[in-house]
Image 1 (cartoon, rainbow, N blue to C red):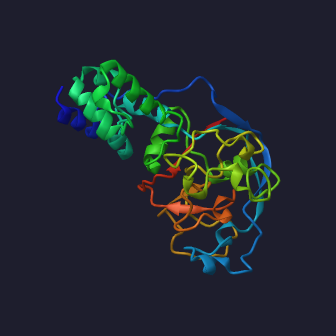
Image 2 (cartoon, rainbow, N blue to C red):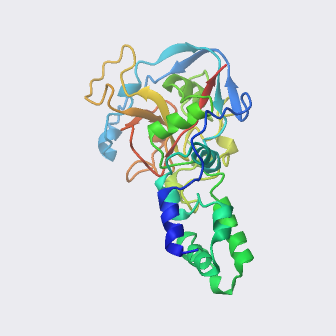
Length: 313
């Protein structure tokens, strides 16, 4: 098989399957039930030390999280982990859906059947150029190359999918028979009902999450569930760090909020949780608080933005 053709197929996102109907997982497999009841949403804190100026943040701290108030939600289910590459790849293949651009470069979408059609020189070039195999591929036969490539692809399976925009995340959740979480649902699942600052409590602890620029991991992102000490009160993983997560809501004021900004309205979607890359030049505890709100254009693609889904009880 011609190497350039394989590359064109890869970059074009060829999946070889027509669109299919929604693919519902069995009941609530892989999800955690969040019980009905009240919780404290938002904050009562103030930036009395004017740290926002010190660090050059885009918006004032805490002002769009006010007023802190008690909200009662019905029970719902939320994914225990962020949606992984392997889960999203199933969606891409079965629904003949748009391919995250990073997959076009790292070869993640290439399936074994396609690879087995490639001749030996093509496999070697793919191993060197696409999969970045750290070995002398000229000394490897077909089976060794195929096995090594499969291992390289497998390293991505349990990583959270990234480089997906709000619409992609929304489509995936609906395909699974779920939906994106509302801000209030996400925040309750992250911090419990006692108003804690972080999923694990009120004190910052960088060992409990993937932050610091993702320097502990080759790709920045960590395999989902890698930080059991950072789990939320309900047993939900990675609600702080690893990847920021799209939620359903437009960025707007809470009821009774006095802060004014042109960013409010149906302009930006909210993302929650803080990502491995930090914010700009800094990785600050502020950005990983469960009440912290960041907003982005719905079509944005970032290497540290992913998502998880929820389902009604």
